[in-house]
Length: 227
Image (tube, rainbow, N blue to C red; front, side, top):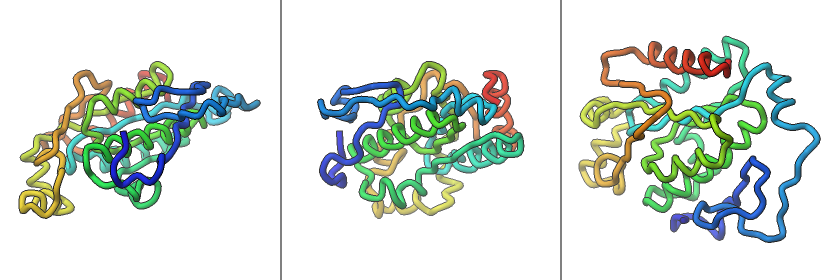
């Protein structure tokens, strides 16, 4: 599915599991003339060079829930441990790669699809990848999970009540949405489907510091021997 802001076919699928022609409903490559090319240097060799196990930490939650803040703290701690990381942030990605997308349901689906493909390439490169996006729909998060090898996708639910997010409102977006200045705003007039079984569940209601929640994520990675 593609949003009205997508020009042509948008970004083609770039799965990292040796896939050729892929399922149309997942928005992947539909050309019969493309074949996955296995290169001489593979993921295992890149991971060995980096002395780490690559994975994708997918931070999801409402706007203002603290996704980017916590993800940034996690990346900082991993960097201090000597790990190779990259953080993909929702606002930053919309400055370039996804700059042609709006905020309709269809465009949100395409936004997550592109980020899922990009994140998969980073994981294949042996990088511990952090993606911080509202990503409101369970089906789209599940589609990203399916594109990766088992165990690579780690869903981190930054669970903050809507009232708490509205009270924070660091960008003034909730105020504008309530005033009718922003349409299709998640939590107001567009749904958010919370994860049902996230690998990491962070309750960010103000009772814990961002630093403590970041450490919870790092501890989870240590338990999985990713770091």
